[in-house]
Image 1 (spheres, one colour):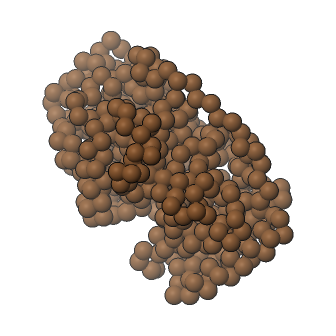
Image 2 (spheres, one colour; image 1 turned 45 degrees about the horizontal axis):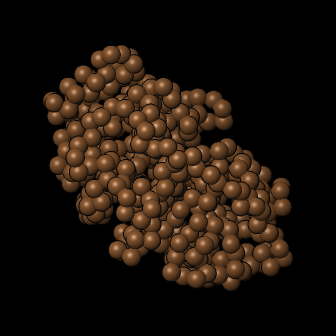
Image 3 (cartoon, rainbow, N blue to C red; image 1 turned 30 degrees about the vertical axis):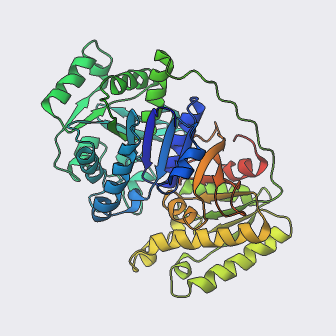
Length: 444
Protein backbone atom coordinates (compact mmCIF):
# COMPACT_ATOMS: atom_id res chain seq x y z
CA UNK A 1 0.00 0.00 0.00
CA UNK A 2 1.40 3.37 -1.05
CA UNK A 3 1.58 6.20 1.46
CA UNK A 4 -2.03 7.24 1.73
CA UNK A 5 -2.93 10.83 1.12
CA UNK A 6 -6.45 10.47 2.45
CA UNK A 7 -8.90 8.13 4.14
CA UNK A 8 -12.55 8.94 4.59
CA UNK A 9 -15.90 7.85 5.97
CA UNK A 10 -18.94 8.86 3.94
CA UNK A 11 -22.11 9.53 5.90
CA UNK A 12 -24.12 7.99 3.07
CA UNK A 13 -23.30 6.06 -0.06
CA UNK A 14 -23.90 8.73 -2.69
CA UNK A 15 -21.76 11.13 -0.69
CA UNK A 16 -19.04 8.50 -0.56
CA UNK A 17 -18.98 8.11 -4.33
CA UNK A 18 -18.96 11.90 -4.65
CA UNK A 19 -15.61 11.96 -2.81
CA UNK A 20 -14.27 9.06 -4.87
CA UNK A 21 -15.16 10.87 -8.09
CA UNK A 22 -13.47 14.10 -6.98
CA UNK A 23 -10.28 12.25 -6.07
CA UNK A 24 -10.18 10.20 -9.27
CA UNK A 25 -10.72 13.30 -11.41
CA UNK A 26 -7.79 14.85 -9.55
CA UNK A 27 -5.50 11.94 -10.34
CA UNK A 28 -5.71 10.15 -6.98
CA UNK A 29 -6.57 6.41 -7.40
CA UNK A 30 -9.32 5.62 -4.89
CA UNK A 31 -11.30 2.62 -3.67
CA UNK A 32 -14.52 2.78 -1.64
CA UNK A 33 -15.21 -0.19 0.64
CA UNK A 34 -18.72 -1.08 1.78
CA UNK A 35 -17.38 -2.42 5.08
CA UNK A 36 -14.00 -2.74 6.76
CA UNK A 37 -11.91 -4.89 4.39
CA UNK A 38 -9.63 -7.77 5.32
CA UNK A 39 -5.94 -7.86 4.43
CA UNK A 40 -6.55 -9.63 1.13
CA UNK A 41 -9.10 -7.04 0.01
CA UNK A 42 -6.77 -4.20 0.95
CA UNK A 43 -3.95 -5.84 -0.99
CA UNK A 44 -6.15 -5.99 -4.09
CA UNK A 45 -6.19 -2.18 -4.13
CA UNK A 46 -2.60 -1.55 -3.04
CA UNK A 47 -2.18 0.95 -5.89
CA UNK A 48 -4.72 3.34 -4.37
CA UNK A 49 -3.67 6.53 -2.60
CA UNK A 50 -7.07 7.09 -0.98
CA UNK A 51 -9.39 4.66 0.80
CA UNK A 52 -13.01 5.28 1.66
CA UNK A 53 -15.52 3.53 3.89
CA UNK A 54 -19.18 3.95 2.97
CA UNK A 55 -21.50 4.54 5.88
CA UNK A 56 -25.06 5.38 6.84
CA UNK A 57 -24.55 7.90 9.66
CA UNK A 58 -26.52 10.62 7.86
CA UNK A 59 -29.69 8.70 8.72
CA UNK A 60 -28.61 7.36 12.12
CA UNK A 61 -28.98 8.46 15.75
CA UNK A 62 -26.21 9.78 18.00
CA UNK A 63 -26.45 6.55 19.99
CA UNK A 64 -25.76 4.55 16.83
CA UNK A 65 -22.81 6.82 16.10
CA UNK A 66 -21.29 6.27 19.53
CA UNK A 67 -20.61 2.64 18.62
CA UNK A 68 -20.36 2.47 14.84
CA UNK A 69 -18.59 5.74 14.09
CA UNK A 70 -16.09 5.16 16.87
CA UNK A 71 -15.23 1.75 15.40
CA UNK A 72 -14.97 3.19 11.87
CA UNK A 73 -12.75 6.10 12.89
CA UNK A 74 -10.54 3.79 14.94
CA UNK A 75 -9.99 1.56 11.89
CA UNK A 76 -9.39 4.51 9.56
CA UNK A 77 -6.80 5.86 11.98
CA UNK A 78 -4.79 2.64 11.58
CA UNK A 79 -4.33 3.43 7.87
CA UNK A 80 -2.13 6.40 8.82
CA UNK A 81 -3.36 8.56 5.95
CA UNK A 82 -2.21 12.17 6.02
CA UNK A 83 -5.84 13.31 6.26
CA UNK A 84 -8.89 11.43 7.57
CA UNK A 85 -12.12 13.00 6.37
CA UNK A 86 -15.62 12.58 7.82
CA UNK A 87 -17.67 13.38 4.74
CA UNK A 88 -21.05 15.11 5.16
CA UNK A 89 -23.55 16.28 2.59
CA UNK A 90 -22.80 19.69 1.07
CA UNK A 91 -26.29 20.82 2.12
CA UNK A 92 -25.27 20.08 5.74
CA UNK A 93 -28.75 18.79 6.60
CA UNK A 94 -28.63 17.17 10.02
CA UNK A 95 -30.29 17.43 13.40
CA UNK A 96 -29.59 16.68 17.07
CA UNK A 97 -31.39 13.33 16.71
CA UNK A 98 -30.63 12.25 13.11
CA UNK A 99 -27.28 12.51 11.34
CA UNK A 100 -25.77 14.73 14.03
CA UNK A 101 -22.60 16.25 12.60
CA UNK A 102 -21.86 17.66 16.04
CA UNK A 103 -21.75 14.19 17.59
CA UNK A 104 -19.58 12.90 14.73
CA UNK A 105 -17.07 15.68 15.40
CA UNK A 106 -17.02 14.84 19.10
CA UNK A 107 -16.26 11.19 18.32
CA UNK A 108 -13.58 12.04 15.76
CA UNK A 109 -11.83 14.47 18.11
CA UNK A 110 -11.70 11.76 20.75
CA UNK A 111 -10.39 8.98 18.49
CA UNK A 112 -7.73 11.19 16.90
CA UNK A 113 -6.91 12.98 20.18
CA UNK A 114 -7.20 16.24 18.29
CA UNK A 115 -8.09 19.57 19.86
CA UNK A 116 -9.26 21.49 16.77
CA UNK A 117 -11.14 20.06 13.78
CA UNK A 118 -11.18 21.98 10.46
CA UNK A 119 -14.64 22.13 8.87
CA UNK A 120 -15.17 22.99 5.20
CA UNK A 121 -18.55 22.81 3.46
CA UNK A 122 -18.39 25.09 0.40
CA UNK A 123 -17.87 23.30 -2.91
CA UNK A 124 -18.22 25.56 -5.97
CA UNK A 125 -18.04 22.47 -8.20
CA UNK A 126 -21.37 21.42 -6.68
CA UNK A 127 -22.72 24.98 -6.54
CA UNK A 128 -22.41 25.14 -2.74
CA UNK A 129 -20.92 28.22 -1.12
CA UNK A 130 -20.22 29.47 2.39
CA UNK A 131 -19.87 33.18 3.12
CA UNK A 132 -19.30 34.53 6.63
CA UNK A 133 -20.49 31.21 8.02
CA UNK A 134 -23.73 31.02 6.02
CA UNK A 135 -24.42 28.26 3.49
CA UNK A 136 -25.87 28.90 0.04
CA UNK A 137 -26.90 26.31 -2.55
CA UNK A 138 -28.19 26.32 -6.12
CA UNK A 139 -31.52 24.97 -7.28
CA UNK A 140 -32.39 25.00 -10.98
CA UNK A 141 -29.75 27.63 -11.74
CA UNK A 142 -30.89 29.98 -8.96
CA UNK A 143 -29.06 30.45 -5.67
CA UNK A 144 -30.64 30.32 -2.21
CA UNK A 145 -29.56 30.65 1.37
CA UNK A 146 -29.96 27.10 2.66
CA UNK A 147 -32.81 27.99 5.04
CA UNK A 148 -34.72 29.39 2.04
CA UNK A 149 -33.78 26.61 -0.36
CA UNK A 150 -36.94 25.20 -2.02
CA UNK A 151 -35.91 21.62 -1.24
CA UNK A 152 -33.51 21.52 1.70
CA UNK A 153 -35.54 23.89 3.88
CA UNK A 154 -38.35 21.32 3.57
CA UNK A 155 -36.32 18.11 3.80
CA UNK A 156 -38.68 15.42 5.18
CA UNK A 157 -36.23 14.22 7.86
CA UNK A 158 -33.67 16.97 8.48
CA UNK A 159 -35.00 20.32 7.21
CA UNK A 160 -32.44 23.12 7.19
CA UNK A 161 -34.00 26.07 9.04
CA UNK A 162 -30.71 27.79 9.90
CA UNK A 163 -28.10 28.97 7.39
CA UNK A 164 -25.41 29.94 9.91
CA UNK A 165 -23.59 26.62 10.15
CA UNK A 166 -22.02 27.26 13.53
CA UNK A 167 -25.41 28.14 15.04
CA UNK A 168 -26.81 25.01 13.38
CA UNK A 169 -24.02 22.94 14.96
CA UNK A 170 -24.56 24.53 18.37
CA UNK A 171 -27.86 22.63 18.54
CA UNK A 172 -25.94 19.36 18.16
CA UNK A 173 -22.86 19.88 20.32
CA UNK A 174 -21.49 22.09 23.07
CA UNK A 175 -18.05 22.18 21.47
CA UNK A 176 -16.52 25.62 20.93
CA UNK A 177 -16.34 26.93 17.38
CA UNK A 178 -14.77 29.66 15.29
CA UNK A 179 -14.81 30.95 11.73
CA UNK A 180 -12.07 31.79 9.24
CA UNK A 181 -14.26 34.05 7.11
CA UNK A 182 -13.76 35.13 3.52
CA UNK A 183 -12.12 38.41 4.38
CA UNK A 184 -9.61 36.75 6.71
CA UNK A 185 -8.98 33.85 4.35
CA UNK A 186 -8.03 36.22 1.53
CA UNK A 187 -5.77 38.36 3.73
CA UNK A 188 -2.17 37.91 4.80
CA UNK A 189 -3.48 37.06 8.28
CA UNK A 190 -5.17 33.78 7.34
CA UNK A 191 -2.43 31.48 8.69
CA UNK A 192 -2.18 33.56 11.85
CA UNK A 193 -5.95 33.32 12.37
CA UNK A 194 -5.94 29.58 11.77
CA UNK A 195 -3.02 29.06 14.16
CA UNK A 196 -4.69 31.17 16.82
CA UNK A 197 -7.79 28.96 16.77
CA UNK A 198 -5.60 25.86 17.05
CA UNK A 199 -3.52 27.33 19.89
CA UNK A 200 -6.68 28.25 21.80
CA UNK A 201 -8.08 24.75 21.30
CA UNK A 202 -11.18 25.94 19.42
CA UNK A 203 -12.88 22.61 18.73
CA UNK A 204 -14.52 23.39 15.38
CA UNK A 205 -12.88 25.75 12.87
CA UNK A 206 -15.16 26.51 9.92
CA UNK A 207 -13.41 27.82 6.81
CA UNK A 208 -15.43 29.81 4.27
CA UNK A 209 -15.30 28.88 0.58
CA UNK A 210 -17.11 30.88 -2.09
CA UNK A 211 -14.90 30.30 -5.15
CA UNK A 212 -12.16 28.06 -6.47
CA UNK A 213 -9.66 30.70 -5.38
CA UNK A 214 -10.76 30.67 -1.74
CA UNK A 215 -11.09 26.87 -1.98
CA UNK A 216 -7.41 26.63 -2.89
CA UNK A 217 -6.46 28.89 0.04
CA UNK A 218 -8.50 26.71 2.40
CA UNK A 219 -6.79 23.58 1.08
CA UNK A 220 -3.38 25.14 1.63
CA UNK A 221 -4.22 25.83 5.29
CA UNK A 222 -5.75 22.41 6.00
CA UNK A 223 -2.71 20.68 4.49
CA UNK A 224 -0.30 23.00 6.33
CA UNK A 225 -1.71 22.27 9.79
CA UNK A 226 -1.90 18.47 9.39
CA UNK A 227 -0.12 16.53 12.09
CA UNK A 228 2.01 13.36 12.00
CA UNK A 229 -0.12 10.21 12.01
CA UNK A 230 -3.04 11.91 10.33
CA UNK A 231 -5.41 14.82 10.93
CA UNK A 232 -9.17 14.51 11.28
CA UNK A 233 -11.26 16.95 9.20
CA UNK A 234 -14.98 17.29 8.52
CA UNK A 235 -16.88 18.60 5.53
CA UNK A 236 -18.32 18.05 2.09
CA UNK A 237 -16.34 16.85 -0.93
CA UNK A 238 -15.16 20.46 -0.95
CA UNK A 239 -12.43 19.06 1.32
CA UNK A 240 -11.11 16.93 -1.56
CA UNK A 241 -11.37 19.71 -4.13
CA UNK A 242 -9.50 22.05 -1.77
CA UNK A 243 -6.77 19.51 -1.03
CA UNK A 244 -6.41 18.58 -4.69
CA UNK A 245 -5.70 22.22 -5.53
CA UNK A 246 -2.94 22.20 -2.92
CA UNK A 247 -1.56 18.81 -4.00
CA UNK A 248 -1.29 19.96 -7.60
CA UNK A 249 0.33 23.21 -6.48
CA UNK A 250 2.99 21.47 -4.36
CA UNK A 251 3.59 18.61 -6.79
CA UNK A 252 2.10 15.85 -4.63
CA UNK A 253 -0.28 14.86 -7.45
CA UNK A 254 0.72 14.95 -11.11
CA UNK A 255 -1.20 12.20 -12.91
CA UNK A 256 -3.79 13.14 -15.52
CA UNK A 257 -6.70 10.67 -15.30
CA UNK A 258 -8.20 9.11 -18.40
CA UNK A 259 -11.70 7.65 -18.60
CA UNK A 260 -13.05 6.01 -21.73
CA UNK A 261 -16.83 6.12 -22.29
CA UNK A 262 -18.33 2.68 -21.52
CA UNK A 263 -20.84 2.81 -24.37
CA UNK A 264 -24.57 2.23 -24.18
CA UNK A 265 -26.33 -0.62 -22.37
CA UNK A 266 -29.18 -2.39 -24.13
CA UNK A 267 -31.26 -2.19 -20.94
CA UNK A 268 -30.76 -1.11 -17.35
CA UNK A 269 -32.77 -1.22 -14.14
CA UNK A 270 -33.25 1.71 -11.75
CA UNK A 271 -34.66 1.64 -8.23
CA UNK A 272 -35.56 4.97 -6.64
CA UNK A 273 -36.53 5.78 -3.08
CA UNK A 274 -36.11 9.53 -3.61
CA UNK A 275 -38.94 12.04 -3.15
CA UNK A 276 -36.87 14.89 -4.58
CA UNK A 277 -38.30 17.11 -7.33
CA UNK A 278 -34.95 16.68 -9.10
CA UNK A 279 -35.44 12.91 -9.22
CA UNK A 280 -39.05 13.43 -10.28
CA UNK A 281 -37.91 15.41 -13.32
CA UNK A 282 -35.32 12.75 -14.12
CA UNK A 283 -37.90 9.95 -13.94
CA UNK A 284 -40.35 11.85 -16.14
CA UNK A 285 -37.62 12.54 -18.68
CA UNK A 286 -36.64 8.87 -18.73
CA UNK A 287 -40.25 7.72 -19.17
CA UNK A 288 -40.45 9.96 -22.23
CA UNK A 289 -37.16 8.49 -23.48
CA UNK A 290 -37.98 4.80 -23.66
CA UNK A 291 -37.95 3.67 -20.02
CA UNK A 292 -40.85 1.80 -18.47
CA UNK A 293 -42.00 3.13 -15.09
CA UNK A 294 -43.31 0.98 -12.25
CA UNK A 295 -44.88 2.65 -9.22
CA UNK A 296 -43.98 0.59 -6.12
CA UNK A 297 -45.89 1.13 -2.88
CA UNK A 298 -43.29 2.04 -0.20
CA UNK A 299 -45.65 1.23 2.66
CA UNK A 300 -46.04 -2.31 1.35
CA UNK A 301 -42.25 -2.63 1.04
CA UNK A 302 -41.83 -2.00 4.78
CA UNK A 303 -44.86 -4.01 5.89
CA UNK A 304 -45.06 -7.60 7.08
CA UNK A 305 -45.94 -8.47 3.50
CA UNK A 306 -42.75 -6.97 2.07
CA UNK A 307 -41.67 -10.24 0.43
CA UNK A 308 -44.87 -10.38 -1.60
CA UNK A 309 -44.51 -6.69 -2.53
CA UNK A 310 -40.94 -7.29 -3.71
CA UNK A 311 -42.09 -10.31 -5.73
CA UNK A 312 -44.82 -8.29 -7.47
CA UNK A 313 -42.43 -5.46 -8.30
CA UNK A 314 -39.82 -7.93 -9.55
CA UNK A 315 -42.37 -9.57 -11.84
CA UNK A 316 -43.31 -6.21 -13.34
CA UNK A 317 -39.68 -5.23 -13.77
CA UNK A 318 -38.85 -8.61 -15.29
CA UNK A 319 -41.56 -8.18 -17.92
CA UNK A 320 -40.08 -4.87 -19.09
CA UNK A 321 -36.51 -6.16 -19.13
CA UNK A 322 -37.42 -9.34 -20.97
CA UNK A 323 -39.10 -7.16 -23.59
CA UNK A 324 -35.75 -5.38 -24.04
CA UNK A 325 -36.72 -2.14 -22.28
CA UNK A 326 -35.04 -0.32 -19.42
CA UNK A 327 -37.16 0.10 -16.29
CA UNK A 328 -37.46 2.45 -13.32
CA UNK A 329 -39.10 1.13 -10.15
CA UNK A 330 -39.90 4.11 -7.94
CA UNK A 331 -41.58 4.65 -4.57
CA UNK A 332 -42.47 8.31 -5.18
CA UNK A 333 -42.80 10.71 -8.07
CA UNK A 334 -41.83 13.96 -6.42
CA UNK A 335 -42.48 15.46 -2.97
CA UNK A 336 -46.27 15.44 -3.32
CA UNK A 337 -46.12 11.63 -3.43
CA UNK A 338 -44.01 11.37 -0.27
CA UNK A 339 -45.54 8.85 2.17
CA UNK A 340 -42.97 9.38 4.84
CA UNK A 341 -45.54 9.99 7.59
CA UNK A 342 -47.00 6.52 7.02
CA UNK A 343 -43.56 4.91 6.72
CA UNK A 344 -42.28 6.50 9.93
CA UNK A 345 -45.04 4.88 11.98
CA UNK A 346 -42.84 1.80 11.98
CA UNK A 347 -39.45 2.09 13.68
CA UNK A 348 -36.56 1.55 11.28
CA UNK A 349 -38.89 1.51 8.28
CA UNK A 350 -36.80 3.89 6.16
CA UNK A 351 -33.81 1.57 6.44
CA UNK A 352 -36.03 -1.40 5.59
CA UNK A 353 -37.31 0.46 2.53
CA UNK A 354 -33.77 0.81 1.23
CA UNK A 355 -33.01 -2.85 1.93
CA UNK A 356 -36.19 -3.93 0.14
CA UNK A 357 -35.25 -1.92 -2.94
CA UNK A 358 -31.78 -3.47 -2.82
CA UNK A 359 -33.25 -6.97 -2.65
CA UNK A 360 -35.49 -6.14 -5.60
CA UNK A 361 -32.60 -4.81 -7.68
CA UNK A 362 -30.37 -7.77 -6.89
CA UNK A 363 -33.08 -10.20 -8.02
CA UNK A 364 -33.48 -8.41 -11.33
CA UNK A 365 -29.72 -8.08 -11.82
CA UNK A 366 -29.04 -11.76 -11.28
CA UNK A 367 -32.06 -13.10 -13.17
CA UNK A 368 -31.67 -10.81 -16.17
CA UNK A 369 -27.85 -10.77 -16.14
CA UNK A 370 -27.82 -6.97 -16.11
CA UNK A 371 -24.48 -5.21 -16.44
CA UNK A 372 -25.58 -1.68 -15.47
CA UNK A 373 -27.98 -0.43 -12.76
CA UNK A 374 -28.84 2.77 -10.86
CA UNK A 375 -29.95 3.41 -7.28
CA UNK A 376 -31.48 6.85 -6.63
CA UNK A 377 -31.77 8.46 -3.21
CA UNK A 378 -28.93 9.17 -0.76
CA UNK A 379 -30.35 7.28 2.22
CA UNK A 380 -31.82 4.62 -0.07
CA UNK A 381 -28.49 3.92 -1.76
CA UNK A 382 -26.63 3.10 1.44
CA UNK A 383 -29.09 0.46 2.56
CA UNK A 384 -29.96 -0.84 -0.92
CA UNK A 385 -26.39 -1.51 -2.00
CA UNK A 386 -25.85 -3.41 1.25
CA UNK A 387 -28.23 -6.06 -0.12
CA UNK A 388 -26.35 -6.37 -3.40
CA UNK A 389 -23.29 -8.26 -2.19
CA UNK A 390 -20.89 -5.48 -3.18
CA UNK A 391 -17.54 -5.36 -1.34
CA UNK A 392 -16.02 -2.26 -2.97
CA UNK A 393 -16.51 0.34 -5.70
CA UNK A 394 -14.14 2.10 -8.07
CA UNK A 395 -14.94 4.82 -10.62
CA UNK A 396 -15.79 3.74 -14.19
CA UNK A 397 -16.89 7.09 -15.65
CA UNK A 398 -17.36 10.51 -14.04
CA UNK A 399 -20.28 12.60 -15.26
CA UNK A 400 -19.03 16.19 -15.59
CA UNK A 401 -22.57 17.48 -16.14
CA UNK A 402 -23.75 15.75 -12.96
CA UNK A 403 -20.84 15.93 -10.50
CA UNK A 404 -21.09 13.71 -7.46
CA UNK A 405 -22.82 10.76 -9.16
CA UNK A 406 -20.30 8.79 -11.23
CA UNK A 407 -20.80 5.44 -12.88
CA UNK A 408 -18.87 2.93 -10.75
CA UNK A 409 -17.66 -0.65 -11.01
CA UNK A 410 -18.71 -3.09 -8.27
CA UNK A 411 -16.16 -5.54 -6.87
CA UNK A 412 -17.78 -8.58 -5.29
CA UNK A 413 -17.25 -12.22 -4.36
CA UNK A 414 -20.67 -12.82 -5.94
CA UNK A 415 -20.04 -13.72 -9.59
CA UNK A 416 -23.23 -12.07 -10.90
CA UNK A 417 -22.37 -8.80 -9.15
CA UNK A 418 -18.61 -8.61 -9.72
CA UNK A 419 -17.95 -6.13 -12.52
CA UNK A 420 -21.49 -4.71 -12.41
CA UNK A 421 -21.61 -1.04 -13.39
CA UNK A 422 -23.64 0.87 -10.83
CA UNK A 423 -24.51 4.54 -10.44
CA UNK A 424 -25.63 5.97 -7.11
CA UNK A 425 -27.54 9.25 -7.29
CA UNK A 426 -28.46 11.56 -4.44
CA UNK A 427 -31.86 13.20 -4.51
CA UNK A 428 -30.62 16.66 -5.54
CA UNK A 429 -27.97 15.44 -7.98
CA UNK A 430 -27.95 15.28 -11.76
CA UNK A 431 -29.39 16.83 -14.90
CA UNK A 432 -32.87 15.94 -16.12
CA UNK A 433 -31.43 13.35 -18.51
CA UNK A 434 -29.34 11.59 -15.85
CA UNK A 435 -30.96 8.14 -16.18
CA UNK A 436 -30.81 8.29 -19.97
CA UNK A 437 -27.15 9.40 -19.85
CA UNK A 438 -26.21 6.41 -17.71
CA UNK A 439 -28.12 4.03 -19.98
CA UNK A 440 -26.44 5.52 -23.05
CA UNK A 441 -22.99 5.58 -21.45
CA UNK A 442 -22.35 9.25 -22.04
CA UNK A 443 -21.47 12.05 -19.63
CA UNK A 444 -24.70 13.95 -19.03
